[in-house]
Amino acid sequence: MEQYTLNLLFVGGTFLLYIGIAVWARAGSTSEFYAAGRGVHPVLNGMATAADWMSAASFISMAGLIAFSGYDSSSYLMGWTGGYVLLALLLAPYLRKFGKFTVPEFIGDRFYSTTARMVAVACLIIASITYVIGQMTGVGVAFSRFLEVSNDAGLFIGAAIVFFYAVLGGMKGVTYTQVAQYCVLILAYTVPAIFISFQLTGVALPPIGLFADHAASGVPLLTKLNQIVTELGFQSYTEHHTNTLNMVLFTLSLMIGTAGLPHVIIRFFTVPKVSDARWSAGWALVFIALLYLTAPAVGAMARMNLMDTIYPQGAQAESLNYDERPDWMKNWEVTGLLKFEDKNGDGRIQLYNDASEEFAATAEANGWQGSELDVNRDIIVLANPEIAALPGWVIALVAAGGLAAALSTAAGLLLAISSAVSHDVVKGTLAPNISEKGELLTARVSMAVAIGVATWLGLNPPGFAAQTVALAFGLAAATIFPALMMGIFSARVNNKGAVAGMLTGLFFTIIYIFLYKGWFFIPGTNQLSDTPDGWMFGISPLSIGAVGAMINFAVAFTVSNATDEPPKEIQELVESIRVPRGAGAATDH
Image 1 (cartoon, rainbow, N blue to C red):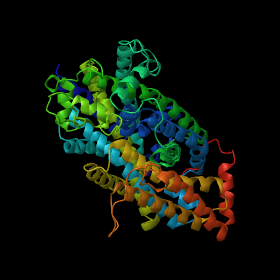
Image 2 (cartoon, rainbow, N blue to C red; image 1 turned 30 degrees about the vertical axis):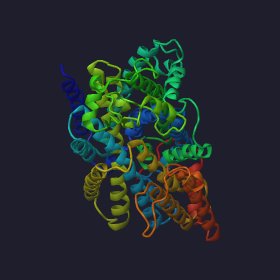
Image 3 (spheres, helix red, strand yellow; image 1 turned 90 degrees about the vertical axis):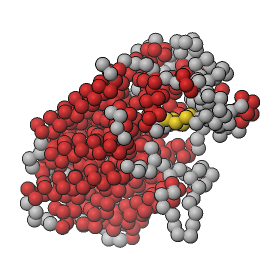
Image 4 (tube, helix red, strand yellow; image 1 turned 120 degrees about the vertical axis):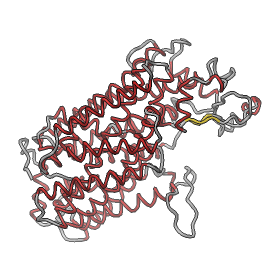
């Protein structure tokens, strides 16, 4: 059977499954649309949370980053996993005990302020829209290669699928769809990894194979990979090369950003009891660990296979003749995500670090005039089975898995946005007397609008998927996480402090990111340099969310201590949230 037919069968089959689940689990009330009727089992919720969490960035981009940056990209693993520990210990059970539908609703009630609620809505929408851009990018990448359609057409197809099951099913439909999507994506990630690990090392378990001997050379796999990349002028794969402070801040930004992402938090509103929220977070960590323990091996082995393809006889021998390139290269060239430019006219593919001053003499002696192969990092996981010449059904499975990862997170993000608009803006502020039927219709309309906006932004994303997502984490870290933490653990922070802190964190983070990424300019000025030498105190735009969070905390406490204390009933409410009573059903809304 042709590869295209296999891809179509696997992708089409999973899409039919998602649509069937949405029809079966369609929401018939606002409680089902916002919180799945608060009846989801903790194990299923943990699985759905894992799918909600493991986005295109985790499935598609993270291993690509690890493949090209090595140890320095371990921040993604540490930050994202650590964030779930924070979420399980510090936020999930307390927010579930409060018994609300949305994050802005909690902030509005805790800080007894409609203004605080609206600021939280704005922060939620900005962070979620930024995050969903990465998911739509991943959808386009997967569709353009495996279903042989354009990037734009792939985005529209993916948006149509999300529109159907998210608008129809709400949180109830999305939850059970995400359970199915988790099963698809984890199989799609681990099955090819097992094949490739066995090929390269003779060890079937990828996390163990990563530290085993390379079968062809007899030396440890990572040692062999280090040898190849350093011979071509690249930095050592297993050593730390970036600014340590920046790496710490970036990891912290990912951690607290994870704990502050609204689409993740609202998953814990779907379980029956407060204790179930903590169990859900624990199960989510188990399900996430299956992928995250595999990702370093996927990245390293993909880099090894890529280098072996270009330099089959070793880095010191002649490279691959372009006319003899394998079919997987031809397939990805069509998408524009892999490009070759024969700069020295020798007909061979040179792939080396042409920015390395130390390697310049070697390149000149070889007659090389620049690295000639441009490989988009987002294709590594998707192309990995093809590079390793795995069976066609494995390639088709990876296609379905990549789309499942992107669509599951996109649905969760869009649900968080639509819930904030319909429940917090319309029901909570503009039309408090709206009927349940009217609110449900508003939620579905806002979901449709959010899908349209996300698709439009996905057509021209501001960076590759994982980078775009990292910026969203910075925004969540600087705005929502501090407000939630202070709302739960400090009875002294008042409405003025919360609003001032969120706004300061939001504007500081956005301005810093946009100035250094060059996404807007101040009239009469030039773009600030987006290099370590040009950053303020050497802090990357991707790491600034941690600094924004610190500023948020500082401003909130300063303003609160300079103004009136919160009302006594609010202080008592804060104390009651933390009291270990109420392990049964939380107050329904």
